[in-house]
Length: 202
Ligand code: URA
Image (tube, rainbow, N blue to C red; front, side, top):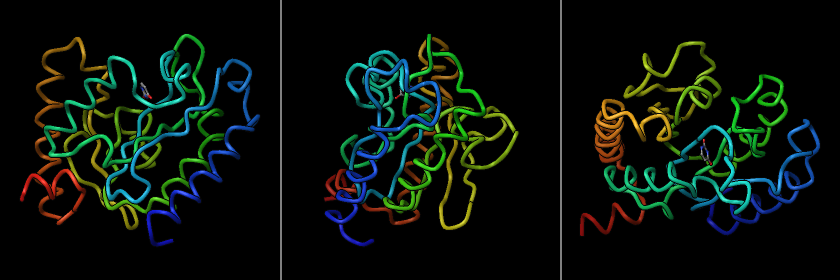
């Protein structure tokens, strides 16, 4: 898997498969799946938890208040939204935005794994507890893991608080914004080129 077009084609094929998914009961309540979107060849993959109400209606990740905040955070790291790929652990909205259940995560896991394989990022930014635990295969909580870089296989993983958790918590906002500054430094250090960062250097 090399160029952007090939990755995009592979993602479209996978998205068509996910659209038909009936692996868990969340399929009953969805308006549509939220597969994820962004640059299919990005070196930065952002992983959230699960779609909320707005995402379920629009079919895109992070389009509500947390999404607007995430866009601001990306700018702090020198990134633009269209230059990263954003996906969730779950592709369907849990009722009343409750936490994902272990069996839902297990049923949906192959899709995120396949997305990761296709995009083949250098850095995975995990937002909050569920995506961090899933990607790092750990039981440790986000408060202990955030702001540090972990190597898992070929990926660097950078866990941060979930933007929704920080929206109304000033202390968490400060921490999260600091962590996105650190992410910017990490991307520079790793010579990770995404268009917005190249432009910023010009
Ligand atoms: N929260 C998430 O984790 N993902 C979304 O897509 C929206 C809100």
